[in-house]
Length: 111
Image (cartoon, rainbow, N blue to C red):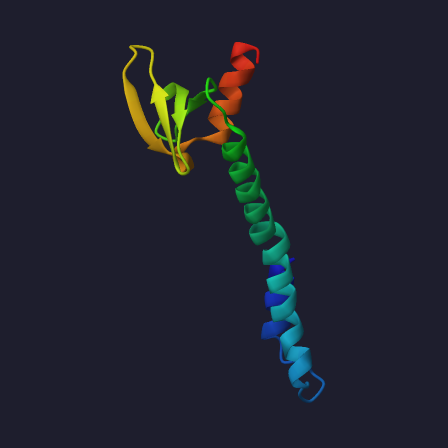
């Protein structure tokens, strides 16, 4: 489809010169394709991740984007304190929690 649009943009037209609107149509179509296949899914996924991170509570087991496994023992506005298996604690940003890995861990544990 994109190759067809590029071909249409490169062809001289054969009509003796088109208006400005006819030349803008392929660019608008390219923008629409990018919006529905790239921009919109990314914003939807970002909203889902934000909603997931806001729904986390104390006691939930999570995985960070760096691969650290832990249990939430305390929360702040923008951070979590995680307790690892050896009872050590680490403070991480909420944005560092991986939704996909944490959900996979929850399914694995049967929650």
